[in-house]
Structure formats: C-alpha cells, structure tokens
Image (tube, rainbow, N blue to C red; front, side, top):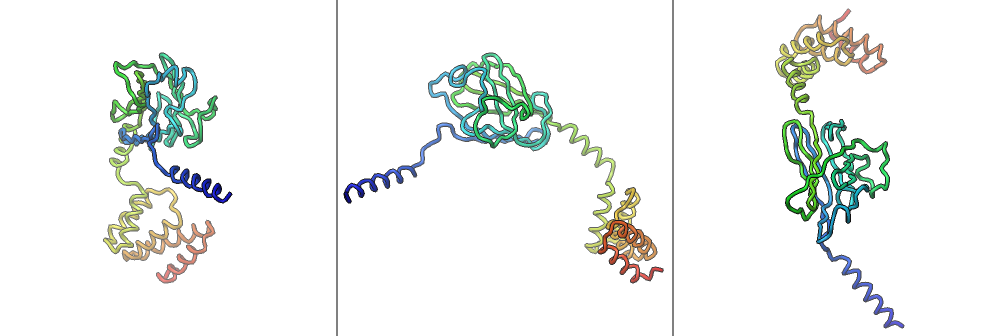
Length: 281
C-alpha cells in the first residue's frame, strides 16, 4: 500500500512539473499603437491563424457576433474624442465586436472592453457606435488575423481588419484641425486672466521682478469679473511687496469682506493681521 501511495505521489509530482512548461499561445496577443493627428489610438487583441481552415462563413460564421479576434475582447482606446464611421465617440476604451457577412460587415464599438466573453445578443444600450462597411477581396491570403491603422492624415485614418482574403475598412476621424485652431486662437488672443495671475504669484514667491508681478496681477484682476477672496489676498501681498501700501490695504479689505461672506476664518484672520500690520484704518 505504501508503494502504491509513493507511486501516485510521484505521478502527481511529474504532472506538477510538466504544468510549468511554457508553450506558445495558439493566438498570441498583440498591441497596435498609432498617433493620428493629435490623438493616440491603441488596439489590444489576439491573433488567430488560418492553419488550413476556412475562416469566414465557417470558423467565423456569417451573421453572428464575433469578438473580432481571439481570447479576450478586442479593445480599442482613444486618447481624445473621435468619429467612428461618422459617429461621434468620446475618448476612452471600447470593445470591438463585428457581425461578418459575405459582402459587408457590421462593426460595433461596445462598452465593457474588459468584460469576459462574447454576448450572444448585443445590449443596444452598450453600443456606442455601429458601422456597416463593404468587404474588399484581397488578391492574396492573410494567414494571421491582423488589424492595421492606415491611410493616415492629420484628421483621420482607416482601421482595417485583414484575414483570409478579406479586408474590411472603417474610417476614424480625429478633431485635429478644431483643436489646433482653438489653440492658435487662444495663444494669438494673448494670455488670459489665469495666466497673468499664476505668473504674478510665481514672480512674487520666487523673488523675481516685483514690479512686473504687480503689473500682471493688476491685469489679471481687471480681466476677472468677480475675484475670489484668495485672489484678492495674493493681490494685496503683491502690492505690499511692491511698496504700494494703499493698494495693498484696498485689496486686503476686499479679500476680508469676501472671506467673511464665504465663511473662511483662515483668510479673515490673515487679512485682519495684514491690515493691522500695514496700519489700515
């Protein structure tokens, strides 16, 4: 009995050792990263191969939901808002499902890219975008399922699915022109109130040109419809450091009133102490 037990233990130990042997995945994982204009697009997917099999209409049935790859859900991520086949899509990550057909496919962006499995029926509330695209027959055969991002321009690209002799394109648009124009307009219009304010506070705290800090702070306050108590506090400190005690007292009184209204006791005390220090009446 003891010999039988030892024999069984030896077999189990052998299985445990064998279980640690690494073998290649039949559908290895891949990641595609592409910048389109100012938008980063990332695709994470697994790549099955034909291995002598008929793919579309057989291994991948027509008119049934396919995970558009193997293993985990194929995931696509956008760093900025895009259009997917003409539909506006927010920045984020989505699963790619498809319904292949002989002459066209339906391609879906779907919420829950990290969820498991392929749903038999798609939940329409989770469908972010749906595109119908015509199949393009290739003159050669693609052994391994491949996703590409091609036809790059500043404002878009083509997401392509290739396998067997099938190529399926989907247009992706990115808002590069609008983003660049907005940036140009902002810069050409000059600094905003926040830019002047941040620069003034930095100059004061860093011991740089206090006259320039005062100039910027005055500019920031003139551009701000209703300065907050903490902004007025910084203005008073800049004025005091620049030697303009009258302006410092005026700003401190405004900050004190606003701090009382906001119920901020810390700023009430700081302004009260400063007004006393500067000899305010």
